[in-house]
Amino acid sequence: MRILTAFAAIVLGACVLAVPTRAQPVGIGTSPQGTLTYTLGSAYAKALQTTAGIQARVQPSTGTGVMVPLVETGELDIGFVNTLELTDAYTGTGSFAGRKLQNLRVVGVLFPIRSGFFVKKDSPIKEAKDLKGKTIPYGYTSQEVLRTVVDGLLANAGLTANDVRTVLVPNLIRGVDDFISGRTDASYFAVGQAKVAEADASVGGIRFLPIYDTPEAVAAMQKVVPTSFVDTVNPAPNSPGITGPTKMMFYDYVMFVNANLPKDRVYAFTKVLAEQKDAMAETMPLFKDMKVARMHRDIRIPYHEGAEAYYKDKNIALTK
Image 1: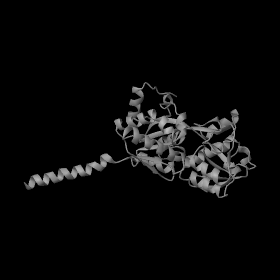
Image 2 (image 1 turned 30 degrees about the vertical axis):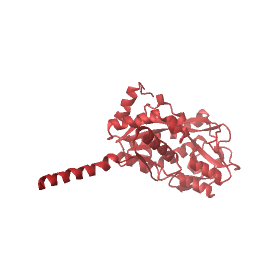
Image 3 (image 1 turned 90 degrees about the vertical axis):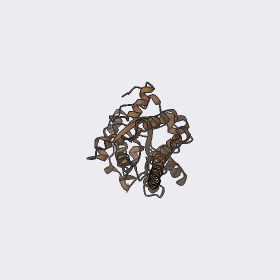
Image 4 (image 1 turned 135 degrees about the horizontal axis):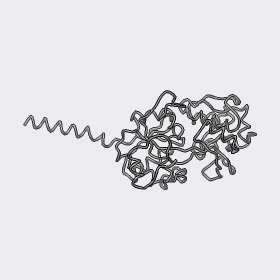
């Protein structure tokens, strides 16, 4: 009887220990609240829960430069970054020089981000070239890839960091806070995000600066940010700072996961991403721009086998 009782206790203990493991939410890594990736991660977490019954927890960090390695080690399951940063991480180049993070796998390419410099609505700065000699946030020590993006925007205007005055910041949020407090003449962010709306309300209105689409300007930008391109953003109710058709830098965002996640789990992740874009667009309007046929695109990083299985079932071929 003592033996049976002891055995039953061991079995019960094992079951108790197993429950938290099964119930552990999926960890979604993002940048701080108010950033694009935080909103994106929140929209996706809600879709996982409501449509697939998968609990997920958004875990913001100081920036994607901190978050991406956490997905590599498995401390987080899912992350969202731009294609440039993910390529840098996987190949150990750029902002991840000397650190190859090859335990990362792609789930899908999402949509292009529209980003640029903005100033106060009544600022005498009218276009990107006018930033010469002005003060901007720079460094982005927790989001180093953003320094590259800012360098690309400056290159588009025929400028470098030496042509402006810089205030070193750790991340996007601090950069906008410094703009609101008057420490900088301009700031950088993606269009349509909560922190941009905060800046717009705090300073009496903002205005994004147009960039240039001449072959020379685009080539200079793409030399720094190879995955970028120029397109036009039109005014919309959820896009403060876009006062008219404005040419801006575009670059794609991507969802990625830890390579060791189970195939069926990532298949479910991919299915939610592809099939719930309309629901997610209610929280993150950029999902309206996502094209499912474009999700399976070659960005020189392997896709997770679970994502590949989904695309095979849906006859979505890999494209360039």
